[in-house]
Length: 200
Image (cartoon, rainbow, N blue to C red; front, side, top):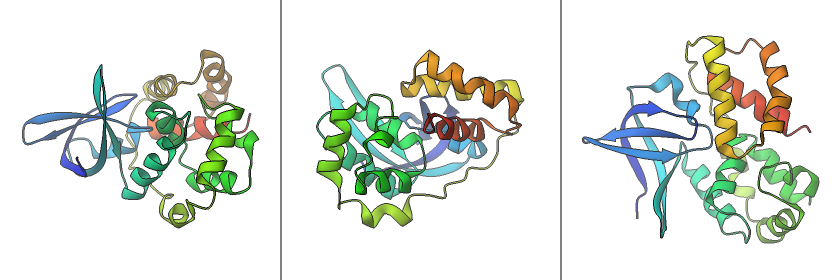
């Protein structure tokens, strides 16, 4: 129904951004909203996909068209809903994800929140050989840094992890390492946290 929305970024929260387009604020759920930290109050174009449920109409947002395509492929897999798909995509090593599917690497896939062994095997069965054309187009989205206090940036990143479905135990495990890092923005902290979580 909707292909993209073009407007001004009005707000950034752990689970979503708000885009003001012609006086209407659209809430777009994203894996890493803080990718847009350096673009607050700027006009951006965000690709979207609307999912309608009995209790909610939810817009999911993507910086690139290829990310939207990957999201659609993920939710086509039995056992993967929109929340799990967006959590998988929050880790922006999408080439690593594709490589894991192509190489039958179940142990890599089950590190994502909400993905068990059965679902990981289903992902491989349904998507193997179908994502290769996306591999080179998905990586390399570096947001401009948000000049923020370290404490606030870290707190926002931890809130974003919780919004993605990671447990308190998992978040506390990476928090210590994050506190030692001198990241300059929430986006950097979140990227680092997701890398650490994938190493468990």
